[in-house]
Image 1 (cartoon, rainbow, N blue to C red):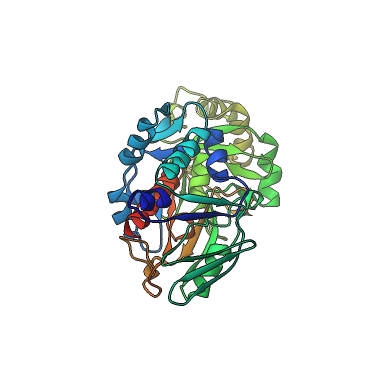
Image 2: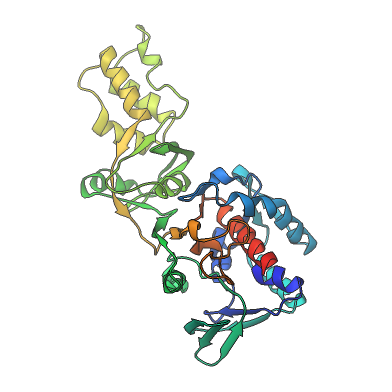
Amino acid sequence: MCALEAGKRGRRVAVLERAGQLGKKILISGGGRCNFTNIHCRPEHFLSANPHFAKSALARYTPADFIALVEKHRIPYHEKTLGQLFCDRSARDILGMLESECAAAGVCIFLGARVQEVRHTTEFVVRTEDEEFHAAALVVATGGLSIPKIGATAFGYDLARQFGLAIREPWPGLVPLVLGDEDRSRYCDLAGVSAEVVASCGNQRFQEKMLITHRGLSGPAILQISSYWKRPEPIVIDLAPGREITAALRDPKQPRNLSAVKSALQAILPNRLANRWLDFHAPAAWTNTALAELERQAHAWEITPAGTEGYEKAEVTAGGVDTDELSAKTMEAGKVPGLFFIGEVVDVTGHLGGFNFQWAWASGAAAGRAL
């Protein structure tokens, strides 16, 4: 995105791609369909030490701008839940679109270009195994630490440090959570069971699906809250959002027993999860106080993860180059004129659902127009 915007403005642009092919992360995103943006994109869908930083770039390159590019290339797409847009066919359509836009803008792309050294004198000098590049401006779009098997490294952070820029400590975001031994033995044989929940941590809450895995919890609600979770905090799960489980049992004509509570909870949750949860939370006596406590626990089930599945399974890396070091309008480093950082390497992390791609397009466009 940065390259094609700069190329359109008559700049001579070289893209140095470390991998042997372009856009590996694009190709695996959205189950191969690329959730390329979200029509509801707003600054509050992003996590950063400075919540205002992303506003300028997001306002100047919007989802509508990217959709216009997709429609120009006649790529069929559809909206899934919550404003998420996906390709009808394949993520290759988005990659092909960006490649053809770069070609039209005269951008030169070098694959397998492993950077050995970056120096800065009167200009930037970037040395790869085979070549040396000289330029007045250098843009770092190296991503974070997520999914190392497709080539993620700490290169962008190392480069920022080389030039004296501060880094906000990175951590895995949008990542499945791992449970401790006791909770794992209680619930993880239910792997594959999912339910609509509200997952909360601090002031953040997300209502989406939760999935039980062999090692812990996943699904959109859990991935979302994982970006905000820090060990040893608990997360709080509402198993019955907007529903009252024990209402019928307060009727004096209704029986009050485990069977009645199971029926009430099974009307909301998958049977196996309802039964298992009650194995550990059913009261000894069915008093009004006990029913009230059961109701409270169903809406505020506290569970303390032991950790996360780490960068191998994380969809994004939170943290990164401190936004205080960069111009919100251009993404240029204040201390080093001509040096820019864009996308995931910066301390701006989107929620699940196309927001991280929109940040990539918007920050890329901001830098590309400023070069």
